[in-house]
Length: 291
Image (tube, rainbow, N blue to C red):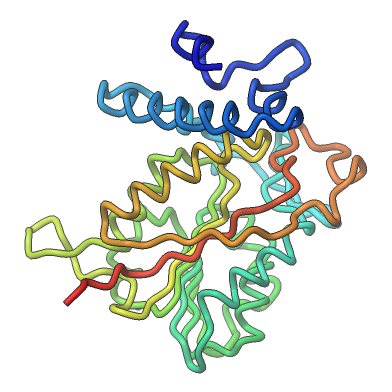
């Protein structure tokens, strides 16, 4: 495996059947080979950043998402190209995310991306004192109002791209818990959001962090590389490293994610966005400085 990597064969190459070298290594029980591929992937992504080139993580699901209509259809929300924006199989995961970011009474919580409202419904059941929802798609915003979300006690809806609404988001904060799950954005957007959430210091460009210190909790929908385990494992390492640079510890809890997923789940969907048996649920907290 080391010879193959050193020969320059891309770590994320797919064969004619759509499988990675990582798939074969793991299925064959070759743990050392699989780990070597993960490390090769991490190194490759870091080099791309140093060279200021586009990372393989920076692949938007749909750059034109906000300008196209979306449709609520039974157990799913889809865009005009039949990409799955959100689907009901995510519900058990969203309930866990909600419990993580709203673990104490009367919390102030922020959710970026309403979608089908799965996590927001779960958060409401936990009775936060303040519940801020940021949603950018006009059809989803309309759906929210039709469902009465703008009339729920303690709920504040911010309509627009989070990048354009940071002043309003900050004015409603800080937050005990924050969750991020947008559609049609790059990894760079997620990383930029992390910069905003965890910004500290006295520079002109730095603001008061959105997340309460020292006990605030942040999480995000971890669908990075969700169609191949090798990709997912590499990206989990990279996100964790990026957050650590911001003074944030990330712990992943493995949760079974394929119980309610079968061939029917993806029927009518252009491309399945999650094909893995286990989901790495992230819990992100401020790193405690040692005394």
